[in-house]
Amino acid sequence: MTNTSQPRVGAVLTVLSLAAFMASLDVFIVNVAFDAIGTDFRGVGLSELSWVLNAYAIVYAALLIPAGRIADRYGRKGGFLIGLGLFTAASAACAAAGGIWWLVAFRVAQAAGAAILTPASLGLVIASTTPERRARSVRIWAATGALAAALGPAVGGLLVAADWRWVFLVNVPIGVAALVATGRLVPRSKDESITRIPDILGALALAVGIGALTLGMVEGPDWGWTSGRTDLAWVVTVLAVAGFAVRSSRHPAPVVEPALLKVRPFAWSNATALLFAVPFAAALLANILWMQQVWGYSAIRVGFAVAPGPLMVPIFAAVSHQLAKRVPVGLIVGLGCLLLGAGGVIAALRVGQTPDYATEILPGWLVGGVGVGLALPTILSSATADLPATRAATGSAVVNMSRQIGTALGVSLLIALLGSPVSYRQAHSAFQHAWWAMAAVAVLAAASAIGMTPTTVRSAEGERRSEHGQADGPAEGRGPDAGDEGHGDVRCGVEAGAVLE
Image (cartoon, rainbow, N blue to C red; front, side, top):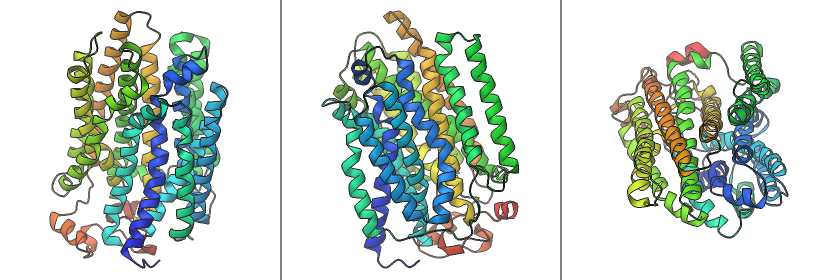
């Protein structure tokens, strides 16, 4: 593909990043709407409301890779348009939902659309960008999605002030505009080397496994941790995950290629993405629920209270980009994970019954925002550094899948820890336990991040040469397929290429 002009490349990146922003925004935008949805649908508890988040995250995680492979094979632009159209239509249906389970069903449709458009948009970004600017473009795309996830509650607060249904309706005009712009600006792209249909049954097994695990965690407090229904959820989880593993080892086009996990930095990036997403998703919802349900904040007030944390994300995403030229990415991500956990600890130690946002919530929220800015964009943009070019898009999809699984587990763990407190003392104790638990998971994420540093690390001189458009030689990390169609990741490990080819 030939890039006709830099302004056109910039316009394409803007359109594709906008769609990724919208899909990522919707993962978290409904957090602030929980109280309003529960009030509108009378008799709905927190465990039922949690499925508005979890159904989206689970289906998104399960379909992300198969949908990406299909789009790669039959056309990324067509796949992107289909996914964006489905996401936009499902958003309108969510706004019209008449009950909680109708809303959950339409969220599943939204997730399917997001799972199609997200990998297609990344593939189009890679295909439309010259090799020397590819890493920068992918970072912009990844940072946009991370910023959207963090900004969700702030945007949601403004919209819920009018009506909770606006958190879904807002997607409609944006989606329509993106559809029109995509048709006019975005070039076509596909991968002729893909000939097999991906493992749909394997994806279904993964969805069932994560769904059963989530169900057991969410309903365990009400059902009883040793009840027959809870035990059944654990059994289904084990059987489904085992079935997924078996199919991945035998299917010619598995959801996750076992060989990918033999690439050490990639395997650790997935572990880190999953572990990082647990406290990220849980801490975000915990802070919102505390301000709404304990302090009695309105949705719009919560939205503005949450806003300072997300403002740290783009700033420290830029900082992490500069640090990555001199510091191993594992250390950057590890520091970000520790700061995210520290933010929860600060909240656990300081919050009280009388609202005092400036001294009790804000300090920890700012620290956590810095951590997200350092960690999340770096995880997403660095995970494929040691993969050969032909696996870069698939590798990115696997990492996003891991992140969505972590999101579902984080929300489920929070709901399980909070339970149904009936007094301030019970609520305070439950939230403290939740914040400390999230901090512990963040420490595990920091430990796993150490393994992310690529085995083939480019020198600082290599980074400077790449940024100035000079190709690196094979010894500096170009994979054997790096030139294939111009779609390769900027940094592809030779060792990984040997493993996967």
